[in-house]
Every structure is written in structure tokens, then in C-alpha cells.
Image (cartoon, rainbow, N blue to C red; front, top):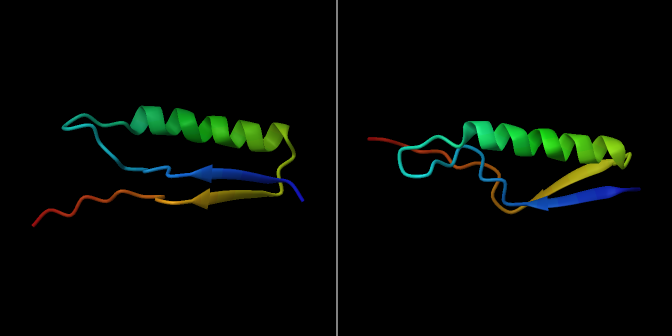
Length: 56
């Protein structure tokens, strides 16, 4: 079994008032490409997956 071990994706995280969505999409595309190229059976995400802002 081949495992691609990743960590701390922090999807949704912003840099002050700037969105990082485009950067995050590119990184996700890279992870998918690597998993495909390496015939990965499992992508493991250790650590923080999402960053969600909650406004009152």
C-alpha cells in the first residue's frame, strides 16, 4: 500500500484581508497530481485541514 502523508493544509486560511484560495487550489492540484503519478492508495492528512472564520 502506498500512502502520501501530508499535513496542515489550512484550507480557508487568509493572509490578513487577502484570500489564499487560488494558492490553495494550486496546492491541491499538485497533491492530486503526485498521488496519481505515484499510484497512491491513500492520502493521509495529519494536522489541521480547515480554518473556518466565525464572525459574531
